[in-house]
Image 1 (tube, helix red, strand yellow):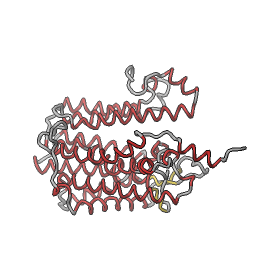
Image 2 (image 1 turned 45 degrees about the vertical axis):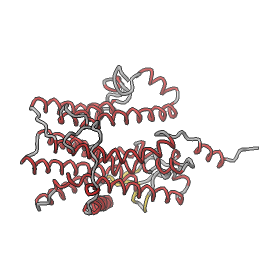
Image 3 (image 1 turned 135 degrees about the vertical axis):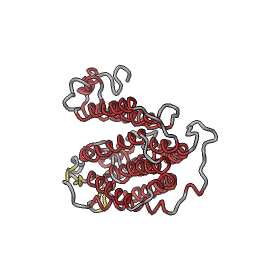
Image 4 (image 1 turned 90 degrees about the horizontal axis):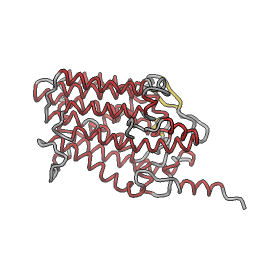
Length: 398
């Protein structure tokens, strides 16, 4: 008797290997990561700035809520939703989906960044107290976390009305907690508005730049001018965001867009984790200014510049150079760049290096996911490649 193809397909979805710790991770991560965001902000604003301080600095209820925070957050998201729909830039097609179709995506994120910059300069010229973002960090983070949960619930519910071919293979396991976390629907859309693609590079990533600039303006309020360390942190991270948006089309082939469903993992990462933890260096420098020599600054600039060797010329160096040393030189470049972001903060505190530590763990985990996907796709050819280039990220180490 021939087995039912639908039953086999359903069983394959049920048996899909769960990631991020499976059901346990799906319960723990949505609890502990939001608390981690709030903890790190509190530490960055405390006089000691010690992640090992016990008891940790706990905020009062008044510090967690400010009526202005949800207005600013929702207004910021609405602004970028509007800019997303403005017919600027080209329209590109994504990869072929399981039903043979391709989705279309507006490539106008860099325009959104530039327009945001103009709006920011206008507000500055009108005397808007942008340094007040320092005091609003906690309330804004609380609101971003709340929006992440509410949005993820909406995405999970609406996925049950989505056609089966639009569901992510890894997010349709039948386990409600895991599917809510990892995301059931691959490319949820309202009309032509792609919710995942919008969140991936728009409000959170550009919001990170805005928060950094607010920290710089707070330092100006406190000390009359921004420090060299603050300028470097702002400059490096603005360059990173601008590069990502200038090359926005490249995100259409990434694992986030092609493979992962859109659930709490990506929603929280895009809207809360990125803007409020990636810029901890700037928040730290407001309360803990660091002296930086010209030589030290020059060395850090050179270190940050190494990242472009690993990524921008990757195709040319596929057989030699960086790509002959490790399989993922772009990951190595990202880590060198992350280190350069932290070095302006000195060595007296661990907090500014949180991003380097976190990013190392993230990239090792992502590399393992890449390995599984490539081995399944290329088979013996991938094994041959791995023997030729045995190191994954760090030459002669890992």
